[in-house]
Image (tube, rainbow, N blue to C red; front, side, top):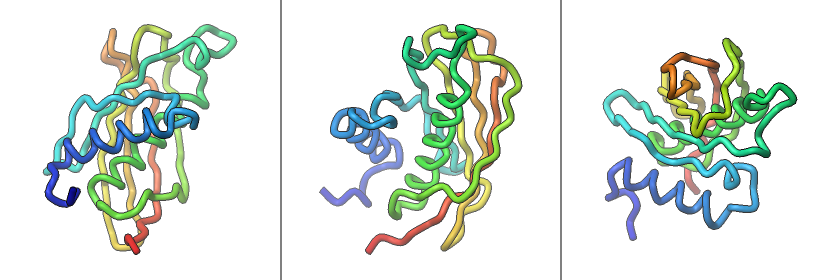
Length: 149
């Protein structure tokens, strides 16, 4: 099937299916990301992640490295799905931890592209605690845009 004919949401669902099933043995596959929303005009997407016992830190909240990994995945997926090029490697990422994420079901992460060029893209994201609606972490990432061969 020609994936250029798919809507961004349908294309993204296919990619998440591949990650969650065919790549289930990898860290990204173990995260089990689910699509919540995708907004083409805003170049924004939201994924949610189920919080599991293996992700917890010594304080009983989501491990900061797990939150960072989830945010990196969502920002890179935003670059990937809105550029439709190859999977973009992370060039740099800065994360701010504002409050702990309780191990309550899910965490929602929204990423928005702030720039999309021929060689680089930049994204901003927020990790949101669903029960309170509060922002737990923010991040800004730069990703290499690599054209399909």
